[in-house]
Image (tube, rainbow, N blue to C red; front, side):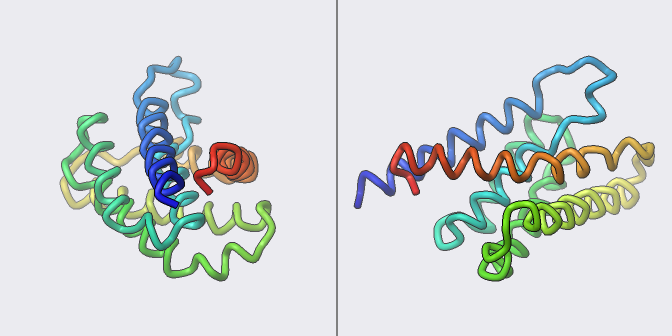
Length: 162
């Protein structure tokens, strides 16, 4: 039992660190607008899979790390990821009943809410408004969710973390 909890904790930490890395790795300018919201997607997955262990504080911590790595306004991502984690945990029992392709629409709504909150913070702090390409990562997350969720579930079962 204790080994399973430790492996679960390590798997969550490693996956979130990998998501942070994928967020900051440089991409060509053409592909940069299409970069998925990796940290948000992973946080949603872990909140749906382990709602009793991964929650709002994990979202806040991941958001602070994301703010530090991306040199953003400190607390901006922490606020939005905390909100995403809260909504995911609140609705996890309903969402987990659906097939993965239907879950992707719930995930898409969460990604849109995270983007709207970030847009509101940008406007409140007087920063310039982004272009329409700002919304493209939500569509990538919509398409990526079934594959990402299936892969992480399979990996978690193989390692004994789930």
